[in-house]
Image (cartoon, rainbow, N blue to C red; front, side, top):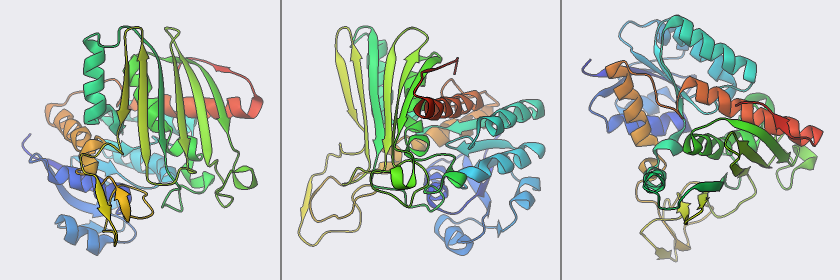
Length: 348
């Protein structure tokens, strides 16, 4: 296969950085987009030749190989099921679905249809985390013991992420799902115990009383080998999106900063257009991102997915449909633990 022809579904935040990544890949071509609004602007910006407001029409087209799902979380299930019914390969943004039941149905149906379902966990491809993984394999930290990881910022720009019925949860589900997916990939084994804590939503939240999901959440994960990881997601951290990973071993440690490690230090009295995601201001000292989408792993992630389609190869551990299901199961186990005050055991 020469070029992989992509049908994009969604026109907002995720669809924008997916298009940026596809535009860098000579083997990827977005041939059409389906969304309810923003079509004209999107097509002009990314040179997409065709558009529709009916995603089912897009899924039926013979000139599309891959459906790239970049819609709000609660729509992932119906869009993936439609794409699979039309025998398309599928890229799905995180989380895979808003319930374990929906995620299982998606995984099983895609297997039945014989189509590839890629789970878009970008941290697996973030250059700094790829290099950290290489160092660990070289024995730089000895035997890994435990990991702390977080994705936090001051609140989602999306009204869908602010409401549990659309998102599937709050900050733990929407943000901590990244570190959860990554540490599971890093250890290369299932989680067997989950302990969770969340603020509870609305009046129980620390700050965002209008969010029906929690504005702070965390979970402790115990892995099959007996190692641990602590993962956090919150909407109460001001100053820009803060993604960090700490890896502890018997012979060393690694500290990885994905979002505040720019080689540029800027001081500006008037400010400028953009520094990093979720910053309130660019005045005074900031660390402007050089290539944010590449640093967070999106570019290499989507290139990898397109290569898998071209070569008809299954995705690796960490970004398969089953890994997306496991991430949902772990988050829901954390919610169960937070509600009951008990450790939830299983094999996720």
